[in-house]
Image (cartoon, rainbow, N blue to C red; front, side, top):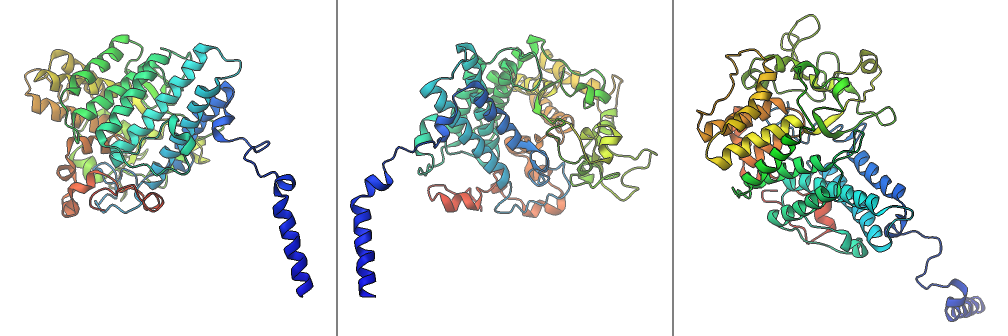
Length: 471
């Protein structure tokens, strides 16, 4: 045993003395590609763009299937203002995964450029990356508050740094910077649907400005900025409302003229089984809150186009013992519905939203509704009423007070943009959660409900991250 131990010790000593020759432990790995050195061509950058959108939206994942994310709004069934510590943690994680990939791609372009790619194409790719980073942060700040800002300059320390959270104001400053650069670099039109263009970037920046004008920043100076940008999009005449309310979410119009940018499903990457949206013929994983349907949604043609209120025989959902389903995402073929397959897109920004952004911002920045603000919202309401006078939901006028008009705009956003991942953000920025919560759940309300909790895993991994109040 002593001889064996001696030989082992001698062998280890020889290995240590000659380790550089035997194993070459210098930090010069052969054939190992780090993330910031992978992206050498435009095609490789394209994988980041498509990969980020796939991470955010594909069958049974991300925004294609997340019935709990905004369940505590007044629209969806099941919200009781008891918000768990990991509420929305998968959405939080996917946005930061996207930001990481985007930053590595940007770092590679800065360091080495792209082989065989014109300067114009490089600029457009950078514009798309900056746009996507801004959108990811815009989603995060509205649900979780001020975020840790990670840029292409941080990639060298990506796996060791423990950044602190920036303020809400600092986070929005970063979002504005990225959107503005995207506006400068993106083309006005790609010639095909799917990619964000200059007008989409302007529309989302207008929405960011509108959010900054309301809670929690409450900086009213941003109303005029939001109105100005939204007006630019309107005056471009690139987009328009689909004329017939019954066609807004048809398969024939899901790529325009109203749909500006959306989560896109196709045959290779379908959306989640469409039966999740139907309570009458499907599973109803998502269903409308029946109190909201009955007491908030005004009677009009749009109600029965956007909501599954009756079966094919005219029997109401309530008579069948069910809540209303979400008709918006059920306009695929019956064959696809039966086989659990759909290529229905879910909007991120629609032209109707831009009209309502303009109406709200124009009213608030001018001390009352201008004719332009009235015309913008009435174009949406008129379509909802099938272009017929509707005493249940009349058109707006310039005789309204600023406050009454503002409430009417928020109400119209509630109806027109229902189940498009938008209502919760309006509730938060207008601070109306207690007001719109069902009576039996009001006792669960607290001001901390306006932010979701930072996921527990994030808190454990980064001691510099502070949890949101109340969790």
